[in-house]
Amino acid sequence: MQPEWLRSGLLLEALREARRLGFLGPGPVEDHVRHSVGFLGAAGGEPQLVVDLGSGGGLPGLILALAWPTSRVVLLDASERKAVFLRHAARQLGLIAPRVEVARERAEDLGRQDRWRGVADLVVARAFGPPAVVAECAAPLLRMGGRLIVSEPPEGGHRRWPDAGLVLLGLVAAPCSERHEGGWYRVLTQQERCPDRFPRRTGVPAKRPLF
Image (cartoon, rainbow, N blue to C red):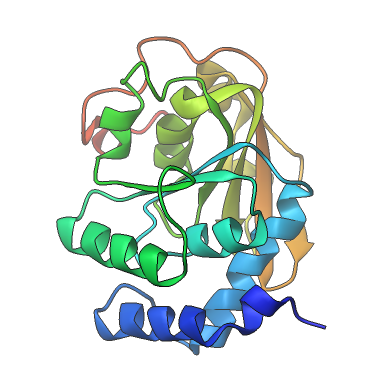
């Protein structure tokens, strides 16, 4: 039986608005929800602080905030339009600060701020960017032992997450992707402190990827 929050008409209404605004990709809204629910299975427990990289239309961040009532969730997006939508959607769902916060920032900028550096238990990324960009933006935010969970294509292999590149950031990837409801997910763990030189300046991780 689905939990009450997953059956919420307000959630589907918010996501349909995200679709109308162009913040969700193609396919039924329900499929996007199922894909986001898969992050819950990959996480396996309720973290204290979660950062959703490039939250956009609110997925998976809004799903995680509803499912984990004691977690603090940061919805991160650089777009002002998306940030406005995220604040409105969160209020409509009863997700208010400080438990749920919308940060209109570039991920590279957030990762250089003392307030956010090395504090997240979990960082999630759904269609945020290529592996090297996701890893460099996430690692500075994670505490030691924290985890990064990334949605993966079905054919995603270990070569997408090379050890030689990840070690520069203090990250270690699970040897293979995990299958959960809605899709495939790769779990990475912050085993060493991310060096202070990361993240590099805004835009550099994409222009000159580490791997």
